[in-house]
Image (cartoon, rainbow, N blue to C red; front, side, top):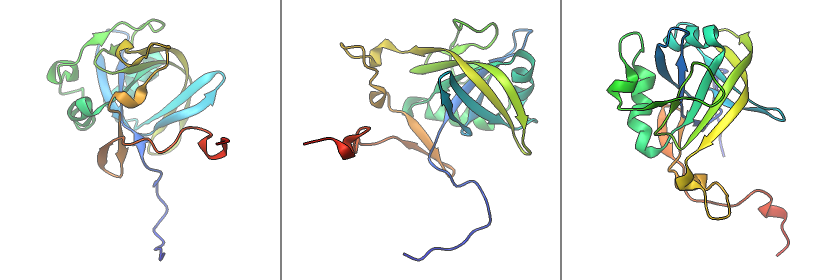
Length: 188
């Protein structure tokens, strides 16, 4: 297999395509679409999002030190894209995309997006100014799961939600299961 060398860049794909809901202390709410996000620790549960300082949501997160990561699905693909290319300075994204804000359990300002199957409440513990983006490192304060995706034994069946990912400018629905954790070493 032949390979080309490209200039240094971010080519770690696919990524989650998440809608991050935020608010300021005056009650103004916004949604920003984020692909630069991920898990950074399991105990305590922590994740990060990276946001450009010029984004409308950046100042809201910095002011309240909280946000909600809302997982997206194929049914939310249009809203996910729209909330990523339109500014909350110019539009009420909740109204325009017919999304419903819900009160978070452990946050004061940032709401959940009701239509998302999983909402992750986050409290910022550190902000790292990195260059084009600032990284907001946060502890997970609560996780909300749509009971439609919890089976009789209490297991979350996330694969049934139609989750989507972002890969180099394209949104993709996650596909077929090819294995489970540890399947390569299980005894037959």
